Image (cartoon, rainbow, N blue to C red; front, side, top):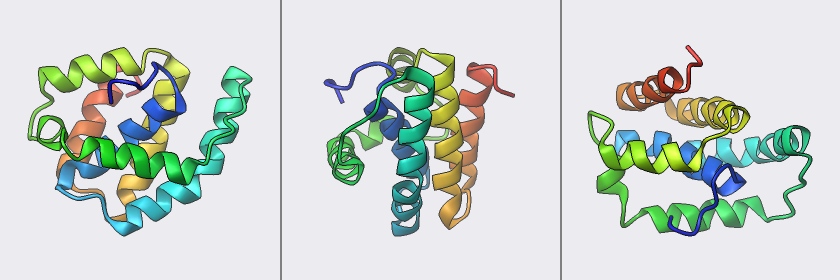
Length: 132
């Protein structure tokens, strides 16, 4: 997670996985929904930043998912920790990127039913970023 650039597609993917893991697992349904959403993320990123992401997003999702396995305890819990606040406040600073991350995370997390912990963390960030 240390090598993720702010406002990058990797930062968005990390945030999506973070929301999805709040029910203590990232389900196959959530991963499938994220993969279906990946081309839309790519298009949104192109429209907003004028940058085409020429990455294999499926591979990138898998890599970031693997990277988070050792950090999951720091990323989960009933309250948003200082670690989480610092991490995502540094990684997602652009309002357009924040919007993409929120939209895609809610979509992916809802694939297996939006768990109350997923919803709680989503709502925290939506409020923090003045979306709701």
